[in-house]
Image (cartoon, rainbow, N blue to C red; front, side):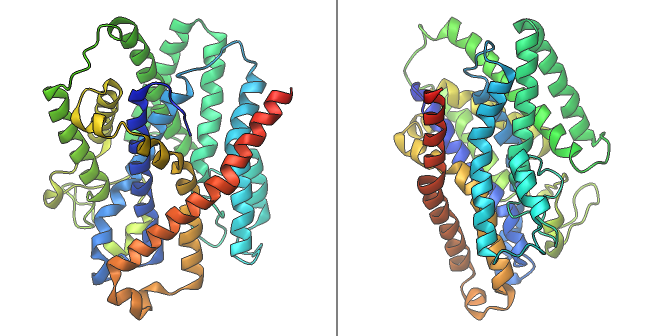
Length: 384
């Protein structure tokens, strides 16, 4: 969604697009295919839930790359709400149409009102009282945390605000890693958001400081060291997100069979069979380092991905993120894929078709819903 004047930001859009489909791999298990031998290749993909933290980092960076503390808090909140919520509401209604407006299975009280108020953060599952958009919780906590951080930046002097946000981020990061938080459904998403959006803000501040001291005299030639680091980190992150889970005992004795992989929450495992994969803080540090290298734009990969194609792909990221659960829910409710002969005979083709349907619906909703809503928001703002 971002239209960057700086060329170095284009490659970030490709990262965003790459992370989106890592998340898709986490939700495909709800089709009950992972336990089948024909679809065993899906099991390693379920480590992609860790891409959510990376989304928070990216969002934190761009949320505060350009912000105006002179703006009123209410105006800032309304602006964010108009950017995030209408698309969710429209897709929720679309989801109801796909399910035949099954209010009993997907209650209006859970979906419509929570979507309207951005309060859907404690019912993110595919159960009988599920929401239409399983991933809406991410957008909701993104909204609330961004407003809180904006208030801190508005009330306190910049240096003190940065210190406070840094403390909040690291405290929540500790809580998240140690699972030291009150066991209340909506606390867990907030802890993740406060930690990693805060890290995104801190990276943004470091990048601004770096620009003021290095931008003018920076070399435009490709750096061999940057290139090697990018290749190593980029490969490691792809393996960790797309091939990081095995569903076999971990070094700590945790066992999660493939048929139970859908219950994955905040625990992952990287045994010997996936020793190139990393997880937890190590993976996030690797991503933040790669993110910084992409900002510097001195390596081969960051230069290759610094292309308009990345902007095009990235523009569909938000739509893919929201609509992929609609496709998965539609298939789950209307087709018994584990017992469908065609799917069993062509497992790879089945997954390719599912991914193609997700991307196609994302493209359609982006151009037919997301962009018109964004244009409407712009017209409303211009008319004020």
